[in-house]
Image (cartoon, rainbow, N blue to C red; front, top):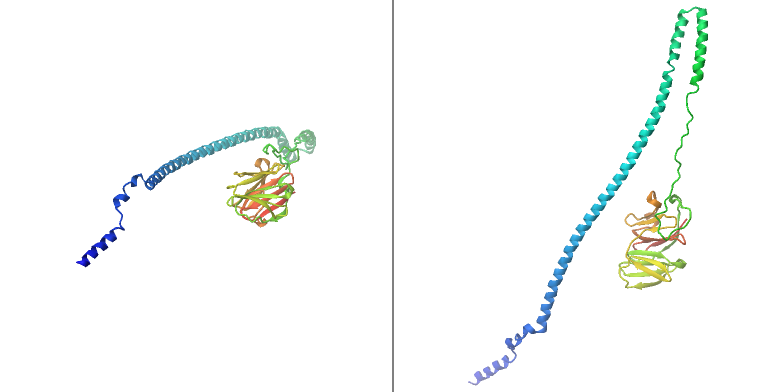
Length: 337
């Protein structure tokens, strides 16, 4: 009897550690945790709707852009075809005019030659005299033929014209209207065939994914780094001067005067004061120069000159220096002669 009571007392002692579930769930729907989960689910649903709408709009935008570009390509082709048709018509008309003019000249010569058939008749008559006539008849006939031949000889000696033929010279006419608006210098245009690059300096900025570069006063240089989100200024000897970090995904950088540097997000080619365009080609590892108007181009630098995925270049008009930077590490400064 005593042991049973002791056992019951032990059970009651263990039950005190249990919590009534009704007390726990009594106000669960109004609790902060429940409202937080509800709000989170609501935000997720709204974000999914926004994302879906955005991607749908993006698909439509891409489709519209494709159609726009397709229309522009067709319009450009139509313009090119129209221009080629005009060139063809002009050349054909000119060709027909030349043919007609030369045909008239040749026909006049043929007509003049037809009038000289009597010379052939005289030759036949002379052969007959030689075979059948007496010496006296041959002598008299010879004198008559000499007179006729002399007249025809004088007439024939007047055949022909002196003509002057003009051929185009090897002189290139350069267009300078395509230069940048700020470059209006009255200087002679240099032929791209005569351009010479001399390596002035080779530096290693120790940066990756260089997207922009610019030459600064006193021989300094500035580079922008896309992935590392910073720009770095180097001294004229190639050593680091200072850098600015956490500026975002910088693509291009340019010195705008007054000790200021502008960071942009666009690519561009560089035009020198002669109107020549310097362009860097990343995948082909080279730098080319294009003449004004785009008639000719010439490769200036290649992989043999140390270029490896060159990313950007900058031409300093005031010093005639060209700065070329690879995507990683190496950069080169050239004197343009």
